[in-house]
Length: 270
Image (cartoon, rainbow, N blue to C red; front, side):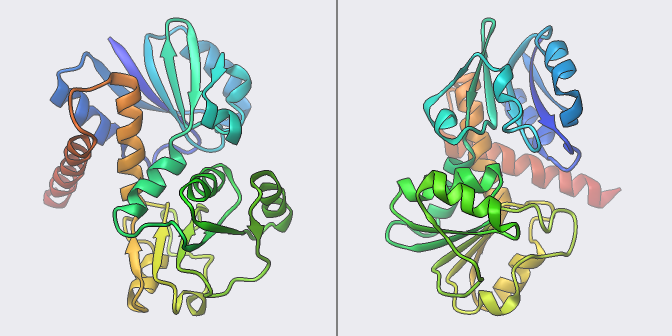
């Protein structure tokens, strides 16, 4: 049986084993989706083992999005420009790298508000932030980057030809937290006073669905978008690339959304 696999460290927080297997079941597709924790120190050994499996695709999360590249046979244009990968398509003996992070984030955001002409601040300077900033710029936003580690922000801004900011203010239409701060915790790296006056606040973190950042932003009157919406969008794109399913993207998202609702209902009854 073919497999799709998520690799990274950690992977325990991911809900993709629920959503993706629900889609595979709906399609009667002969494959299963699994999660495998791969620490960065073990990437070479893991790749050797994975290449011996019958894989259709892999999803890649931190800290492997950059480290995986030397082990791939080819990078599609977007992944090549970003030098980060979140999707690997297996075609014969070829491993092909792609990146859907930015597209997924912007698709989720633009279901609520167009980004063209907007001042958009991305908090973070990792692989996910890089992909989001790149895609937002392509779609016509004026993009700004802030990061706690300044040198990383400056390097990314130089690469993408966007502006680096050195102090957080509320002079933006949209703010996206593209850091992992808030993952399974009540922490946030964005002070509440910065959120006042910002129209839309999005968090890429989706565990919990409503992070402390989003709760605070909502209380201050901001429109908020959970990271689960980005997850649905980018997952649907990955499934389209891997399976070419006979369903529209919104139908794939509906299946995934329902699978999480059902899973949560089962947990609440236990």
